[in-house]
Image 1 (cartoon, rainbow, N blue to C red):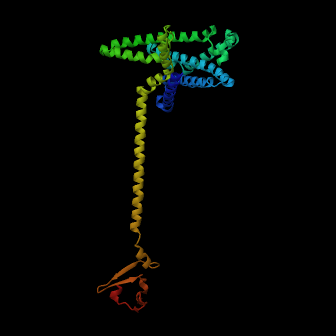
Image 2 (cartoon, rainbow, N blue to C red):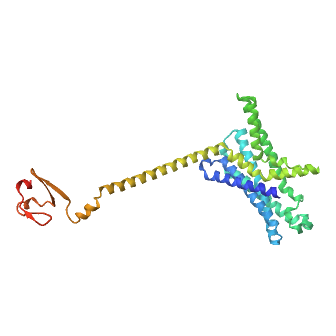
Image 3 (cartoon, rainbow, N blue to C red):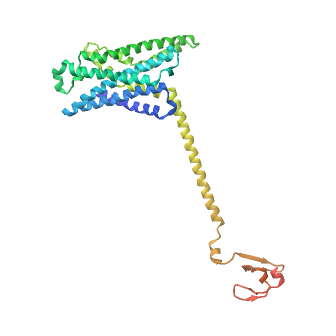
Amino acid sequence: MTIYFIGYGVSLFALTIAIWIFVYFKDLRCLRNTIHVNLMITYFLISITWMTISALQSVPSPAYRETACSLYILLTYLMGTNFFWMFVEGLYLYILVVKTFSVELVRFQVYALIGWGTPAVLVILWAVIKFYYSPSYNDVRLFEGLCVWQLKDIYDCIFICPVVIVLLVNMFFMGEIMWVLITKLRAATTLETQQYRKAAKALLVLIPLLGITYILVIWTPSHRTAKVIFTYLQVTLLSTQGFTVAVLYCFLNGEVRSTIRHHLSRWKTARSLRAEHARQGLSYRVGCRQSQQQLQPAPDATRLYKGRAPRASCVSFTSTTSTVGIQPLSGLFTSPHRFLNGSSYNPAKDDVV
């Protein structure tokens, strides 16, 4: 149980970041990435629902256990959507690589109907038939907190058989895709070791995408020690499946990394430009303030000549006489000139000039 919580918690954290990246950056919006996002959403919802059911079942309350029993139907539906979106991933790659015609001919609505609609029909049929015809109503485990949909019986084949068919079809898709890929690698001029390396990398990427991991953990060994080891391995693989998909198809995706680097570079450039504009605006304001201070008269001169005209000088051929306020020319020869101490005189012609 602890391993499940840790695995689903790590997957939940990684899937949250990956889904946000695909939704936030518009450059990444295309049919292929939209299919990836829907697959990641199924892993995200499965993690939340499983952790919620486990938390409710741990509480010794009939109301909590009834809620957990109802959520188990939702969990089964989400698991079905997970498998059918894996089928959509395989179908998309098969059309793109093997059939080599435009994948845009198949609209996204068709993929959405397969991924979200088909499991709904199967789960409704399974839940109704199991509720009315299941022979497990007398099972003692029903009194231990489990519900009828959590007990195994023959009616589970309504859900299990389509899932097994989906996994087998995805194995066929993977075989066809790998055959085309290996054929193209052999036709290339690369070294044989590089061909094997690329083929192994493609196989490693396709296994979690197409759900081949579930096929690896179907069979359980009967030996006691091997069974314990296999159980831990199975729990680890199943709970971290969402984390693996998020890492391979988002964090290690070259297109995603290039887009993030591009937007990060644009953000840094815009930030530096804003800082430069702020510095230039501050320098301009400081310069204007200093210019205004230089243009203002001295405080003493302002007090001395407050309410009077600016001080000027009259220069004659024989002497220099400072005056305050030059009178109009028409009155220079008629009114006496008066000094600051109150005395007056009639200016000579040279002084007036």
